[in-house]
Length: 260
Image 1 (cartoon, rainbow, N blue to C red):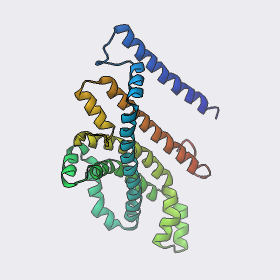
Image 2 (cartoon, rainbow, N blue to C red; image 1 turned 135 degrees about the vertical axis):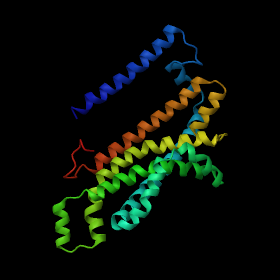
Image 3 (spheres, rainbow, N blue to C red; image 1 turned 180 degrees about the vertical axis):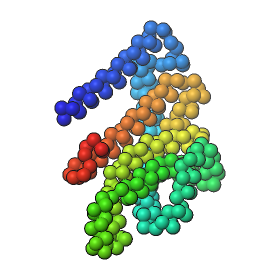
Image 4 (cartoon, rainbow, N blue to C red; image 1 turned 120 degrees about the horizontal axis):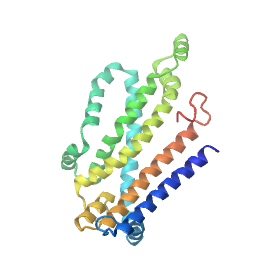
C-alpha cells in the first residue's frame, strides 16, 4: 500500500498540472473557444449538455460492454477448441488473423450494408476489434503450462478434456486477463470508429455522433466534452479489469502482483 499511494498521488498531480497548464495557456494567449477551449469551459459545456451526452455515453458503453463480453466468450471457446484440435486451429486461425489485420474503417461500411440493424452492425464492428487479443493471449496461456504438471497428467492418463479443464485453463487465466485489459480499450475504440463510419444521428446514438454533430456546427467545447467522457470511460474500464485481475489472483500461488 505504501508503494501504491505515492504512485496514485503522482498520477493525480501530473493530470492536475496538465489541466492547469492548459487553462493557463488558453488564458495567456487568449485562444478562441472554437480553436482550443479551456478545461473550465469544457466542464461547463459538459454540465450544460449532460442529459444528451450521458444518454449517448450509455449507448456507447452498452455497445462496448456487449462487444467485450462476446469477444471474451468467443475468444476463450475458440482458443480451447484450437488447443484440442490442431486441424481446427490450422483451418480457422488464418481467418482470425485476417479479421485482425483488416482496418475496421474499411469493412464497417460493408457490415452496415449487410446488416439491417445499426446496433448489430456497431456491435459486430467492436467485436472484431476486441476479439483477437483475447484469442491470442488465451491460446498462449493454454500452451504455456508447467512441463512437470503436464508429465503428471500424462502419467495418470488424463483425457484431453481433463487436461484442458484442470491444467490448461487455470494456466491460461493470467494471459486471459491480460488480453481482456487490452480488448477493453479496443472494444471502445471499435464502437466509436464504427459509429463515426455509420454517421448515425438522433438521440439513441453514441458519443461519436455527438462529436460529429459538434464538428459540423464548430462546437469545439462540446467535442471536447464528449471526448472527455470517452477518455474517462476507457480509464474506468482499464481500472476495473486491473482490480478484477488482482482480486482473481490474490490467492494464486504462481502469479505475482507485478505480473498482473
